Amino acid sequence: MRPVLHFMARTLRPASLLAIVLLAGTGSAPAALPLDQVRLPPGFRIEVLTQDVPGARAMAMSPSGTLFVGSRSEGKVYAVTDALGARPRVRTVATGLRMPVGVALHDGSLYASSVSKIVRIDHIEASLDQPPAPAVVSDRFPTDGHHGWKFIAFGPDGYLYVPVGAPCNICAPDENRYANIMKMKPDGSDLQVVARGVRNTVGFDWHPATRELWFTDNGRDRMGDDVPDDELNRATAAGQHFGYPYCHAGTVADPEYGSQRPCAEFVPPVARLGAHVAALGMRFYTGTQFPAAYRHNVFIAEHGSWDRSEPSGYRVVRVALDDAGKAVRQEVFAQGWLRGGRPWGRPVDVLVAPDGSLLVSDDLAGAIYRIRYRP
Image (cartoon, rainbow, N blue to C red; front, side, top):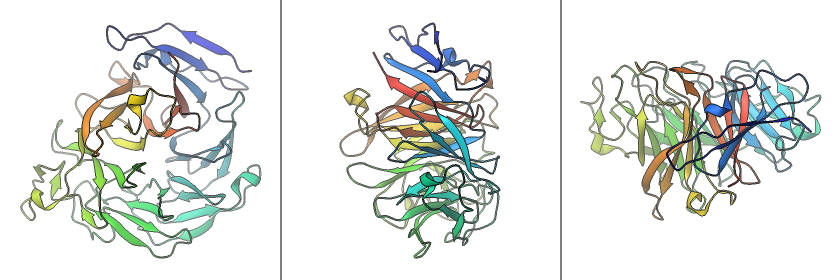
C-alpha cells in the first residue's frame, strides 16, 4: 500500500472543515503538493492519485477503470491503470502528436485529438505496453495552432464531437470552419457543424435527462480585467449561434464587430463565470457519493487567467440548476491552487469516477486529484 500523509484541517468559511489526504505515488515519490492549501465544503477531502502525468489535460475512463489523459505540450497521451486503486501505473500510449489534449473512448478504441486531425488506437486496453501507431480517422480540421487544441467526446447520438476554436483573439473567420463545434461519425464521415459563434470551448457534456449539449466558452482578451465573462452555454437545437465575434457573454457588444450584428440575435449563456477565469472542462455530476443537492449540478475546472492584473480562476466551481435547466446558483467548490498570487496548480478537466468521486486534472503539477465525500 502507498503511504498516506494527513494534513491539518483548514476552513472554507466559519462552519466549514476540510479533511485533506495526500496519497504518495509508487516508486520514488515526487515532492508533495501543498494540498493543505485546497479548501472544500464540509465533508469533502482531496487526494493525489498520481503526479506522473506531465501536462495532464482532458480525461476519459474505461469501464474497467483505466484512466486516459491527454496533454497539450508533451505531445503524449497517457493511460493510468488502477487509477482508483492502491497502485496506479502510468504508461505512455501515444507520442509525437500535436497538442493531443482530447481523449475519448468508443467500442474499445481510444480516440485522441491532434489539432488538424483525430486519431484512433484500436483495442487499446489489450495493448497498453506496446500500443500500435495511431490510425488517422479524419484530417479535415484546420492546422492553426491558436486555439487549435481540442477537447473531444462522444455524444448520446454516437457521434464524436470536435470543436474548432477561433484562430485569433478576435476576428471573423469562416463560421463553417472555425469558432464552432462539429461532430462526425466514429469513422470520420458525416462531418457537420453543431454550434457556431463559439470562440474556444475546451469542455462539454450532455445533460443526463434532456441529452442537450452544454459547453464552456472562453471570452476574448484585451477588453480589460473584468470584461467579458467566460460562459456556460446550453445548445437546445443544432445550428444555434452563440455570439462570437459580435457579442460576448450575451450582452457585451464587441468593440470591433458588435455593430455588425446585435446581441439579441444570439443564444445567451446559461451562466456568466467571470472574466479570464479560463473555464475549461465541465461535467454534470451523475454520481451518488456526493450529497443529493449535488445531483446533476455542473462542475467546471477554471484553469486561471494569464493576462489579468489580479489573477482569477485556478479553482473548481459548481453551478446548481433547477428542474428546467436554469442556473440558480454558482459557487466555488475547490480553491487554493493560487498562493500568494502565484499558482502551484491549474485545474483543467473534471470527470465523475464510477464510485461517484470527482477527478480533477492539473497540467501545471502534472497531477490527477480525487475529491471524495467522507463526512
